[in-house]
Amino acid sequence: MSRSRAEPHRSQVRALRAQFAQADGLPFANLLPVQRLEDALREEGACWREGVFSPVLTLWAFLTQLVSADGSCRAAVARGMAWLVGHARRPCSPNTDPYCKARRRLPESLLVRLTRETGRELHRRARPEWLWHGRRVKVADGTTVSMPDTAANQAAYPQHATQAPGLGFPIARMAVVFCLACGVALDAALGRYQGAGTAEAALLRGLDGALDPGDVLLADRQFGGWFDILRWQRRGIDVVIRLHQTRSANFRRGRRLGSGDHVIRWPRPKRPDWVSAEESRNGPEELVVREIRVRHPVRGFRTRELVVVTTLLDPAAYPAQDVGRLYRARWHAELDLRSLKVTLGMGVLRCKSPGMVRKEVWGHLLGYNLIRGVMAEAAAGCGTVPRALSFAGAVQTVAAFAGTLLGAKPSAAGAVCAALLRAVGAHRVGDRPDRVEPRARKRRPKEYPHLHQPRDSARRVLCSRGYGFRT
Image 1 (cartoon, rainbow, N blue to C red):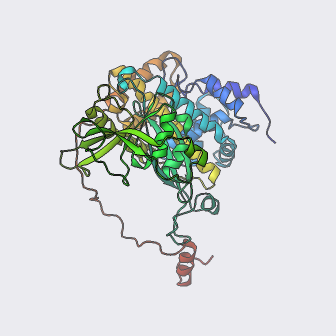
Image 2 (tube, helix red, strand yellow):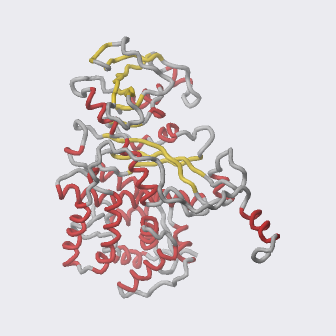
Image 3 (spheres, rainbow, N blue to C red):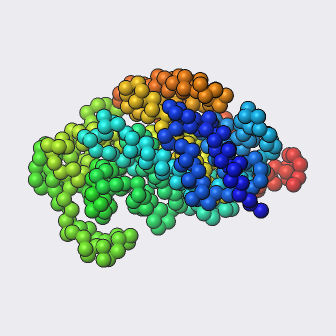
């Protein structure tokens, strides 16, 4: 039975300041302060048992598990043992069961809350020179993640309908809103890959809290529906979105602002299912938008010409060339998703139940935001923008310094942190304008055939032929 242990919990929060770098001037100090952790644990109802793995230690072990190259539970428990021994505390058992049970007890809402709070705090502290025309730009994009093939995961996030049972993996679709200035994840939504209300635009509609009046939403064309643009416009949010593939631009119509630049009125289309009849009746008959033709004369671009739609109608305040460059910056969302899925390993999840899958996703986002916080501090110190620094280089540097920060004395922690920030600031993204690379691999993979039947069936066939032991 769970029993609250308030005093040991507080002492462990204080002791873990070194790991979360909670001293003045250290990374994560402003993003994940002790008071915020305590408030979140209390308000989200985190409980724990009489044992080593309190919510704080479990959260720390979970984050290190998600951002490390070895994402196993055994390695996470080993790091917990090392931390306890280093602080003259009784080490935990190397058995992973207590840690896994404590991890299941962590409220999903705790990870969601900490991710959103750290993201908004870093977004709020973005320097004026990092903004676009003094505006805060938020970029939205979607992706998919796969997970272990268990019955529970299949029920919550079914595999693709074209795959035979036992041969596919459960798959989930997610939409994420990033800060363009510093790359931090502000909010996310997770849903099924197929079915009503599972498109990326539908997921984004559920993230109203991620966008505020005065923001500029930067997104690809799947988010550019008539009613979607109207919805954002009514909230005081401007959009810069590529023209949807079902529409065509005729620059001989409308009010001409320049070459390939005009203001035009879109008539209201047929009401989609997700829009209520009342909302449609109360809406305008026309939507006033600006269309800008953007050309890419550089060889190697897959798309040489496209049309960008925006509600930024003033050509003097927002020149067409600047809007075109802003839309090109939308690619940063693709790079941010790649950092999450490839560098941090979120593309293929490990957990075997839907609840833990969601915790794993939010844990990745929280760890990602903490790394982005270090990058923002390093960028401010070296006089550059966070986008100019390497995310992979920051992850490697923080991982290399983690042990030193753990054992550093308070008097030396500031110097260690300063060295860490200098190292992160030195890892710049290479200047590779308009690079062209073939989408092919030189290294040949192992020539194993694909599995065309469930693994259990294939194993029984092998056993029937005399291979291994019968089960």
